[in-house]
Length: 141
Image 1 (cartoon, rainbow, N blue to C red):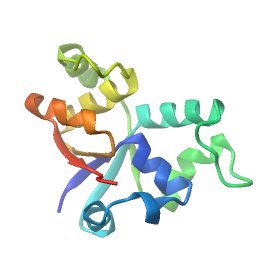
Image 2 (cartoon, rainbow, N blue to C red):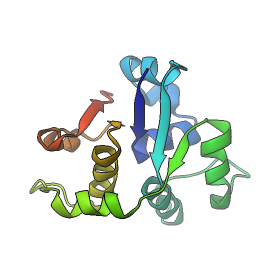
Image 3 (cartoon, rainbow, N blue to C red):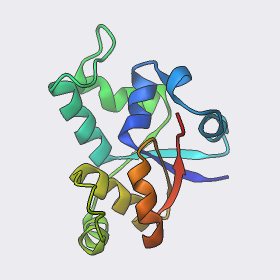
Image 4 (spheres, rainbow, N blue to C red):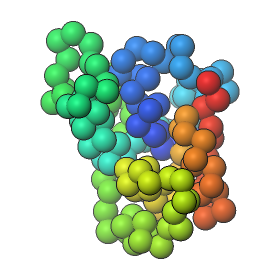
């Protein structure tokens, strides 16, 4: 039984129906195991809304950005966790990789470290943060 924080790219694969094509078999095993609890950060939701606004993520016909929270929580049974002061404290102490300038990612990494969650992402840059207590599973696709 594990507790996993899903990065934005993994949530995107769920809501855009690219799950089967974009998720590796080892990550599918984790996600399909109902003994595991799946979370995403409120930071992921903010990033996802931004990606919808700028056209990088296309939602299914009839799905509006304001439906995202309901879809994530009800359709996919992913719990959304609030980003709070303790997460900001870890974020302020995080040593950032020179080639990784994404503030959304930094916040998500801090959320996982603070809450002792295993982060699942397709972003190989996250591996750098395992030296800072990040537990990480790479979606190798």
